Amino acid sequence: MPANRTILVVDDRINTLKVLMLFLADNGYDVLKASNGDEALAVFSRHPNIDVVLADLKMPGMNGLELFRRMNQLRSAPPFIIMTANATVETAIKALKEGVTDYLIKPLNFEELPIVLAKACRQAEMTRELASLRRQISKENKFHEIIGASSVMQDIFEVVRTVGPTDASVLITGETGTGKELLAQSIHQESSRRDKALVCINCAALTESLLEAELFGYVQGAFTGAVGNKMGRLEMADGGTLFLDEIGNMSLALQSKFLRFLQDGTFEPVGATKTKRVDVRLVAATNADLEAQIAAGRFISDLLYRIEVIAIQVPPLRERVEDIPLLVDHFLARYTGRYKKALEGVSSSAMQAFMDYTWPGNVRELKNSMARTVILSKGPEITLDDLPDKIRPKVKPSSGAAGMDDLPEGGINLRDMEAELISNTLQRCKGNKTMAAKMLGISRKGLYEKMERLGIRSG
Image (cartoon, rainbow, N blue to C red; front, side, top):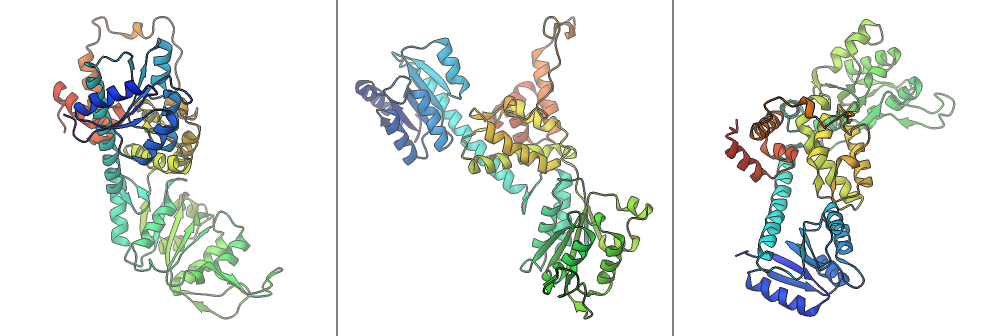
């Protein structure tokens, strides 16, 4: 008997509605009713815990398929079953492609109906469980605003926890888009300076003279256009943290002046004669090889030694592939909310494409790609067709029967193929079964059942 399962029944024929309500109530369901699409939407908006919607296809005004679309605009619709007396193959395919769970032919088979509903209720339960697991995994693998379940990211988080409370200078290295500024923010948040300012400046975005003025400030008359005194970023960061992004772009002259500040904590604003003293914790970042720049005469070795008391190298996304599903889910949740899109998730083939792509722009590129994908998505979940061309796998042209020439003479044992696919996926996900199930496009429970049937050890 289904305990506390709620079904919304929508049919413009009152007699059909009454019969269904009595039958479903007798079978242990809590039943909500609506006689048209607008009424159904009103009920749906008032009841957030509907498990299944059972709706007639042909109704005056809004038909069943349009009702499904409108529900998805409000929030992700629960399993949705369409009833129709005029089913055709084309109608069924269209409905299923749009994300409808199932369809039933009228007059209804009341022996089949409980089976279909029980299956839909199980789907609703698994969806809720998966959402809960995703929230739990995201929470467990989120450090401040950085997401990472991979061992390399967990090691970095531990370093930040250890180094954060100290005043040691930190140099963060890594490719563009890996999240160096987020890491700097986490270092500041882990420090005793968290209640003071974190002041950021991008050394690559300013000319030498502008960078010097921004960093140290200036006094009135220091140069043409200096009509008043201006506080520099160093002084703004007093008591807090200064983050210098792309420090490798700083000129040699400015490096020398900044090195003097690091040695004794004092500086003079541009055009000033009076020395100022501040208490600043330094975090710097670069995507350049500073050792190579020293060898080329473009960076001062003593400055590197000063800023690199603690060195943290952030790996590129292609070296922590197991974090990609977490990041995809994170950005999916962010952008479905921002752009008011009803998306249930990402198909297994689309997730595999995300994981196979090399991400030269790293997390920043993934973030922007997810925003674009969510905005342009058409169905209830993200599929390969929704992905940018550069991420979508390239299909090799086929000649003759599809792949038949590549088959071994003895054929292929499907059981062995399935076992190998699951084992390889588990290995790729470092044994994380939730991640593996997501990649395979099955539920966690379904993965456990397959592992037991195929004799695959959990490792």
